[in-house]
Amino acid sequence: DKQRYKFTEYHKWKFEAQFFETVVGKLVFKGQAQFGFLGQYNSAVGQSAFERFKLGGDGMQGFDFLQGSELIAMRGYSNNSVVPVGANVNIAQSSGSPIFNKYVMELRYPVIASQQATAFLTAFAEGGNTWNKFSDFNPFNIRRSVGIGAKIFLPIFGLLGIDYGYGFDKIPGIPDANKGQFHFSIAQQLGGFN
Image 1 (spheres, one colour):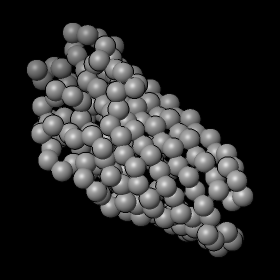
Image 2 (cartoon, one colour; image 1 turned 180 degrees about the vertical axis):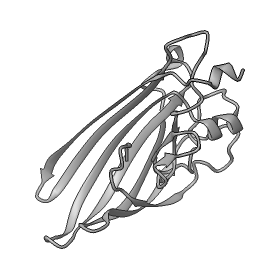
Image 3 (cartoon, rainbow, N blue to C red; image 1 turned 120 degrees about the vertical axis):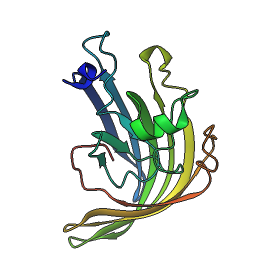
């Protein structure tokens, strides 16, 4: 088994699309879709235990340096709680998943618009999930959440935010993972998704 981890080999694909559209007056709609896939070159070696995706919570850490996992925020759920259906919860939370997708719909209303700071109120709906095998992947089988929040952009810090989200879907094996959650975020782009 040591040979398996002597040289880690994988290919990793990430896709993100987002758009903004004025609804009426200052009210803006944000739509976003994200997808991540970690593949293998050699099926005899199997899936890499590193560079996986962990979905749920505030995503504040952004990156798990021990395993190289990307922490993907999903408001309304506790950190790393969105695990594949039927997976061993403890293993899935600690190691992550090779496939994820996430959708965001957000309404933003600016309350401060100046060169020194921009602040806005938000209402959002999010959905996402993780999978261990591509054959199980279904982009419509998602865990859903809604909530409200406030964000402020300061040039020196980036985007700071506080959100309250509520997840609609229970996560088997993780009690209260979907109950009301407050999330604080500092969204400096450091190479991962926010």
